[in-house]
Structure formats: C-alpha cells, structure tokens
Image (cartoon, rainbow, N blue to C red; front, side, top):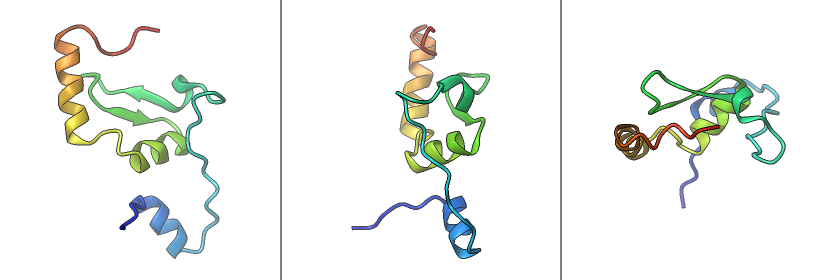
Length: 82
C-alpha cells in the first residue's frame, strides 16, 4: 500500500529539519485559529502550519469535496453556522 506524504513534510524530512507540526485535534484545538474558508466557502485555507498540514494530509480540498461544498453553498447549507 502506498502512503500519502504531503510535499512540505517530504521537503522537511529531506532537509533534515525537525518535523513537529501536529495535526489539528478537534477536541483540543480551536477551529477558527487554524482554518478559514475562501471567499466562495468551497476551499479551506490553513492559517497555521497545523492547519496547512491537516488540510494537505487529509486532502480536505480535493475536487469532490469542493464540488459538494459548491452545491451546499447554493442550497444555503454551507458554511456551517457557528
């Protein structure tokens, strides 16, 4: 089985840098501190290294999700209300 490793993480490992960026933890971390929506509310933007790594590693902006979010926006079901 092939394992997906984000480009930034691969770069850090090749450069011999310490890789200590944690993934976002929904029970411990504040979502608004790490993420924001783009103007169309279809793609997540990482505001921190944790947010960026989480988005990339979990592929949270893959094309299928963007299409679904676009439909939800049209139905006024997205973005989630706070």
